[in-house]
Amino acid sequence: DLHGAFSTSPHQYDLAWHVRGREPTSPELTFEAMKFAEPVSNGYNSLANVRHASTDKAWTLTMVAKSGQPRRLVRAGGAPAEVILGDGWFEKRKERPLTIIERRKGRTSDVFGTVVDISGSKEPFVRSVGQEGGLKAGYGLLKVETAAGTDLCFVAYRPGMYKASGLETDAIQAMVLTDKDGVRAMYLAGGKTLKVGGASIERGEAGLVYVERLPNGTFVVSNPSPTDAE
Image (tube, rainbow, N blue to C red):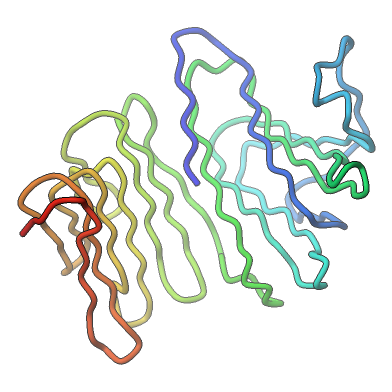
């Protein structure tokens, strides 16, 4: 996920996740008990066992799902942040799932980049997450290093042709997946062209298109737009 928040005046930005997991641990964060300042806003006043930590680096929070498998929330760094944990409510108060809040204060604009690793594997499938861009640059990009390869997740905040981390596109949104054999899939939304490495995909007019390499080596190309295109 790439969440952009833009303003001309400073704000406190809170990005929240609600996770049905338990026993949260993080190698990068050390949590201490905290209390929200009075009066506590609605929603926040429902949280129990509240604790927090601070960082400006990338961080990972690993939780245990009901199945016993790990679930990992992987966050890109780059801005000073307060990470807040608390026990929320679910299913008419039958369950208290984890609430995670990343808080950034005094910032006019910000981009939050997040990857959730649901592979359930003992070793993380998502190895690291890097983030670049912003409102001034006109785009946001996540570079996700996985056990299979490198994935790129792109969003444009204003029209134009952009180059970032080897990707070149005029799309509103784009995604590229790679593995040991190179580019595995390319997804283009709201643009005409997407290029990365030696692979490219183009369409005659702005719209949607994707190409995927199947396990048997063949390719699928599709036009999900409502009109025909070349």
